[in-house]
Image (cartoon, rainbow, N blue to C red; front, side, top):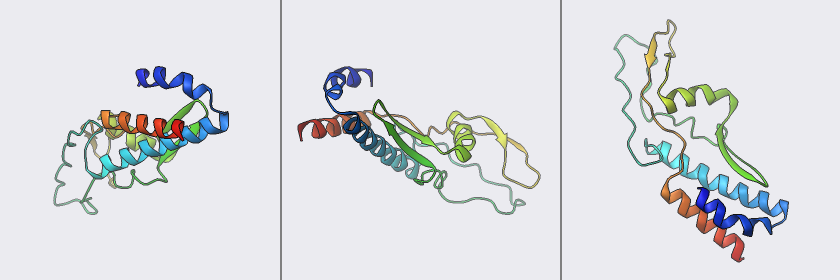
Length: 146
């Protein structure tokens, strides 16, 4: 990322602050789409599959089935924001704790009436892959050319 910033930094300084913010927002949106795609595919930014969800005990009511993190991938929780100097993809305040627990593999209480503690495996949610860097570079080139 630093090499991309060094390469494009001087060119980006020539843009007005409004253009810089517009470009940064486009970059943030591109990254958000990439992160959403990874979450829907149940994989980390580097393409490695997430560890599968633990099979719940038969006695638990309301156990979850289906893909993990599908709610977190929604645009209302996964925010793309920008200023003239930075593009940011982050989780909304109310879901940051859940995202952090899963991203880093922390211990947390299970969503249950009498919650046991569970050591969640690390399931990386956010990150920048080589494909993301290529997409950002193409987006920058397109913007600077036209």
